[in-house]
Length: 255
Image (cartoon, rainbow, N blue to C red; front, side):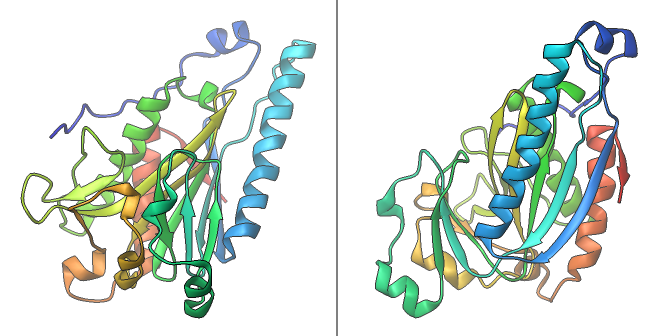
């Protein structure tokens, strides 16, 4: 089990950023989209993603230093299974009719990772960050996202850990009772990220019986509510996530 180093997401200085033809932006704009279909949220992400990349291209073309924006979107999806670019369809255990009968949507996505579930009671976070504002290292970015989740779980006295073989956050990893509480999958282009994390808070875990979660056999899935044996205030969890995002990525959160 690898716990990893503390993530130090420093920005660098202004002169360095000018030399790169950009100005680093130390803020993240936060929006809560509430309950929204996966398809709609995906399209909204793509729109923001394209705008950030377009500005980066224009900056390089004109040698301008207009800073790019960073965003963090919270959302809750109606029941949906999504599978990443490296996912295997056999990890979906329902056919099309069964999905329809159970009211579950399904999408093949352009993120990394295998298959996972999104649904009510789960906090999904989509950070759209220009990593040129932070550090150009996708692996470090994922470790920092994990760090945000680990710190948030600790705020509720739950001990989350990393798995050196699988992205995400786990409980009791080196035991027969290993279970995943937060899945992650991202896409990046020109150092701009999209997609993100799915933290099970009050999630109905029975949906995971219809898939091989993240393509991993022999390990379970859990939620914050199941670990604490009570329903959890999701707004409080979001506030803790923002506090820890601010600390780990060393940024200012704005609305």
